[in-house]
Image (cartoon, rainbow, N blue to C red; front, side, top):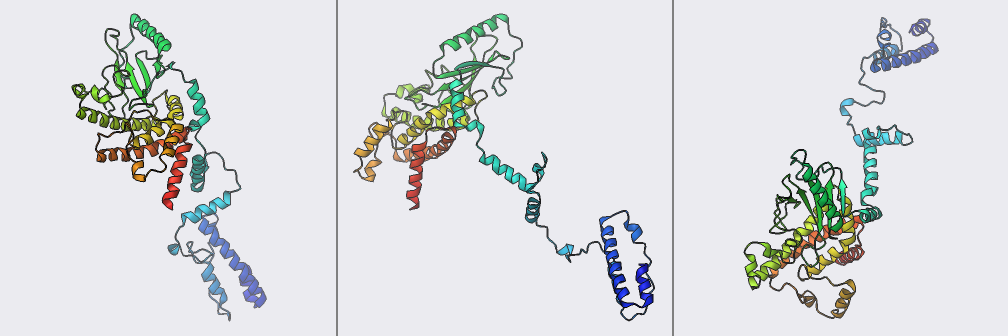
Length: 422
């Protein structure tokens, strides 16, 4: 500032212009320091304003009024804060451009929005290891029919702990474990807990020729301290669906499971209904019950695929990888008007039937085939087809993820969609 006033007193115009530039630059530096809150600001602002002097140019006073103005909100780009609207997208893009070539330390990515989106995209594109078809197949092959686990965290009877068991009870349960390990039918899988010998979980595959075919049904068992005098307690993982008169949607189980419950005509398991077995009314109701049971069975499949019981995830994935094709073929066969539970023809036989009927009209192609459900009203069967069609689409997606042979059904779906688009 002394140089500025010295130049003015000497009357040199060139010196004044130089001093003006220096003074203006110093003032700008002071302003930046003041806006940044630096410790040197207070001292640099303690400048006594000179007495106005009557000079021809008068520019010095203007410059002093400008650079000494205490306004930190006014920036050098001329933007008014009140008129500026923050654009988060532009801000994030600016950050992305700035840090694209940097290796950020672990944890930083989680706080940066554009990196969160990239991470989410990469996670979605990366196939899940648990859904790897080859891995599912290997684990399924290695899944034992009977095995011990440490414990069950989701067992229905996990709270039914009766204290330390008696020695005689433990010996009897271990004896029964050995029998199960040796003599289990091929369609039953069992896991028992080492830490809780009173807990057992079983999976039963639905028998062929029934509306339960190829389904997986899970049961939790509690062996009470009164065993073998008192019977075990059994809970069915229903998912809220009652697929049999003796399997309640609350999980309550009655009678023998595989032989007397998962059978060809579950309708007659209802007390008193067996008397109508040979009547048209009873047969019609039994067929309708089979339709609804198969729908429930399909929903149970989806329930198990999405929330497999603990220690049985490998069985669920592998089972439906192997049997997915058969289940989808059965769905289509039933939607064509055939009895639920009836034998689905092999693909070679199916294609031969279609070729022989190639000249038939479109109306006759939808006519019920031998053994079809003629006793059911068309409107009711239409409701069944609508529900099964939705389930079929969901099952197709889930089975495909698990690595099942779904090529035929996907090709049919694509052709149908292309035809509809035309």
